[in-house]
Image 1: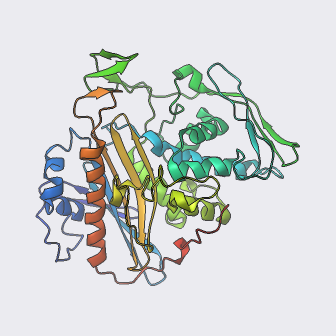
Image 2 (image 1 turned 90 degrees about the vertical axis):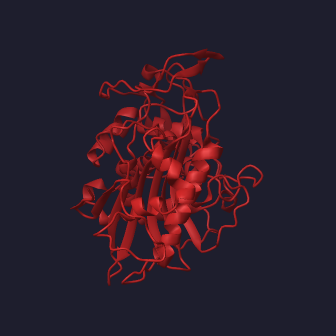
Image 3 (image 1 turned 135 degrees about the vertical axis):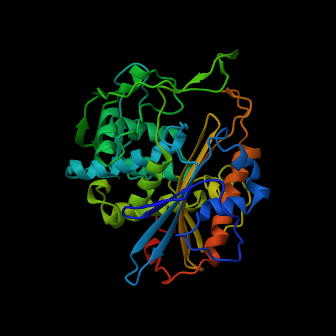
Length: 425
């Protein structure tokens, strides 16, 4: 049975028994779950997905945005198979809240001369850590909070995330996310480095300088006393370790955890800060928001510092929704996607706000799917190309096509998100 609940916005939970959607007919959102109907109406893309929704760990959140006469946004959320008890590995999506928290931390420190452009030196303070020196120049590739945040949003760089994880500290990340309404979030380890749970509790000493080399702020090494709920998350039937197959499920109990609903709401709180309670907003300046919007929506070739060659970083790189794994996507100049993706261990996720300035269309769409049909982890044999990317591309296109023909009482003014991509920070 379909139902809705009124909070700040309206929520619909999808089932798979709704009536098919005639795509030429508009539906009353109070009568039918549009997301479920769109899936049912496109069996060529989603029949197998629906049939295996639990096996594939599929979760979808589609948010309709309707503006009023004052251009204030009102949200209607449609959910498909969203269940906080169904674990998925969030992979690189955890980089988004840590980047936001890092910018917020600078504002909270409020130390003269220390900002996101200040040269930043990361020392080694404990076993397994690595350093990141700085040459204190005005070169825009100098390690800074801004440089790391750029890399996170432009190409989802793992080392950049690790540096901001170290700047924040594991315990502070947990405290800050819980205070903003995400008590279940667990960002407890670095990415792409082999450190155990204890080593990830230790984070490096960090120093900020001005461009002449004068020390402005010193943060000592930190040790996290964060308490995490005991879990037993065993997935799959085996995994590769030291080149050998281990025929037991892979243990995710000590891995990062972040619900899709939380990721969706974190993005909403950044795109529409005025639409969430004050305590759930990130403490950011307008210049911070401009910076985030610029790099969250930019394509790699729109950055000079750092620069990315098109051969390795095509225009649709890390834009899974709408473009999947397309290498030569012809993206309309009027279309922008403000998003963060993640892919690891066969889990594929994208959390996105999509804007079409020419057609005055906007919507949010978050999607996650599991692409590991053989049940073996770390074998580099995941179904991203055959299952994950096509699903992301098609669900994005189906929602986008629906939004193009959906009637709106008031056309949105989207000028806030029109960005001059020739301007670098």
